[in-house]
Length: 316
Image (cartoon, rainbow, N blue to C red; front, top):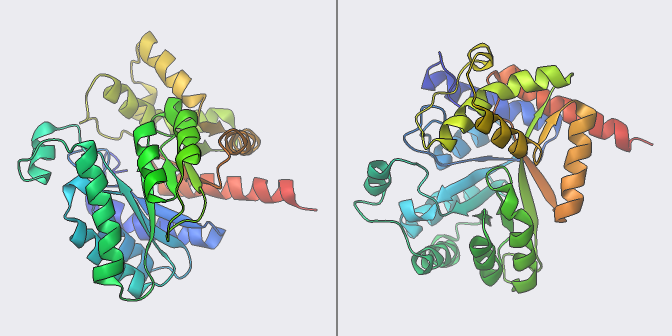
């Protein structure tokens, strides 16, 4: 997130500090998403952020969550992430998604050199070409681990057909998660990438010592989401103080409450219990936590509280 009152260079500086902090806490992986034309989410290429953080860490896995296949030549993506995997063996993930990464039509067309939205068949061909180029053209050594990002049954069907592990965007479209995973598991075909269905579920997660503090930290993202509900993609990521004075409508409050109920926000006990519930409901092999809070220290603290409480719960 690019916070109001900060510069992009400060956000980029925080990227490595965040990766180092999560590595110290023992987390397994971090992914970077591709976004464009958004003041709240910087237009920082995932391949660049991955390289930057990989150079300043030693064991945590890093990668894209995801790069958007229609915006790039398949060979280019294969070369970029194949090179990263050679430089940082067994640490690089290549998460592939479909969307344009922007709500602005002119930006989307510019990314695709004037072309319109990709079709299902074109997206399937792009993903298949990326995988083929990884093996046939790149093969510099250890390959990146490919994942298909999905928020729908259509994406789940493609992941199943190609035999890829799937990363479900529960933090974007939680209502689609169960149906998509049912289709993925039912239609899965083993491949060189994955012998059996493998599921990661991404959950918006904000943890603090008290419910009130967690709600305070969630405030800025609530403002951004309320803007998206109105089709406004150019809402800056405000400070918690500014967010606390935002005039939400009754309809917005209801929509935000419904969304939050399907995520994990609150005290360590409440968050860990909710994450365990989601893991059980979805059968996820792994949960990925996205924590869009304003302050870097608060963001790392959220992960620290979850880690400590989880370890305390499982201690003999």
